[in-house]
Image (tube, rainbow, N blue to C red):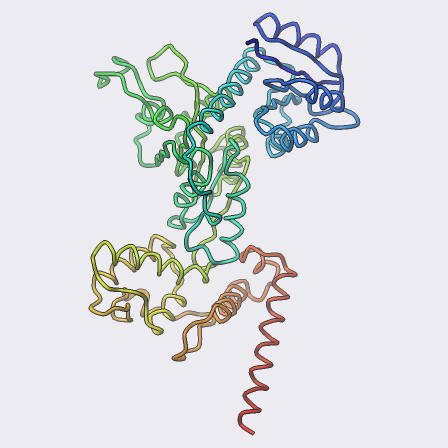
Length: 463
């Protein structure tokens, strides 16, 4: 069947020009002069692609994107925007657009964008057919995420899981960016298809292009055969480009072209291969600073940073420390066949008080060491690394008691610790905690009221 395209633009001359060109290459084209007419047309027949201008009177192209995303989930929308208006293009992608092209139109780019949109739609239909039959995906995509900041990350994962939008994860080394990327993949409709990760800093610059795109036989001296690249290995699934900030400058325009055209050529090859993987990137760098200093291309940054998910360091996620520790203890105890079930009160206090400069990776290594060394069914102080046991925190610590740690105590301790870190600045503390300032005030009021009641009850007991 002929592919049908709906063009929406309040400039009739543009509509007629686009209609004429697209019909010449075999598409069935209709056009409407405004968004309201376009929505009525969508109710009357099915289209395969919508091509819409952004700046229209009455209802804008952004609003049209949102309406289509809400009511026609699998219908790709390509927006047309003035050349260089990157902010508007990014807004359109956030609103649900599949891609954008600049005006004046580059016909080859437009044709490539339409072809890529059709491939993605076909791939989504294939993924639905291949989706395993069984219970729904768990509502909690991240194990061990108990802190408000990581609950916010979870919420973002759920919201973007089934989009094809590029996602950028940022955070300190060891903070769990790959874990979050895998959780995003597992939550998506791509879950039963490949997840492939590559560290851009770990591959020699002269080999990175062949690693990503593959190569044909004879492409270079050591190319004794044809080899598929990671973009092909991840077809239908997810490709994580870790440490994207360390990608060589001469590779950046090549990656940008692949993302724009949704296709690539293996090194030394002539045939285009469609890009069918969702791309997620991760970085520990401040890419905005690298863009300002000319170390990272601005246009590539905008292409990759459609949805930005910052991963907070472990020192700002106190509620996660014991939850992750439990998870790691279970993992390593099962692997080593040891009856370790938890940590003592004293060990828990040290785990909570330590700053964890190596983040989740350091915590995982510390728990693996502790499970290996312990001769008891609980990890104690002498099982932990010296860096943890000898640490003297400059902020609040959990008061030592024999009673179990409650979630209320843990929450109060963590809030106070973050407040101390930000020198009492409640706005910054709320941002670190992943909550708004009013929620922080309510939590502080609740803890103060509980302390008042406890003091009053204690006084009553003494009398």
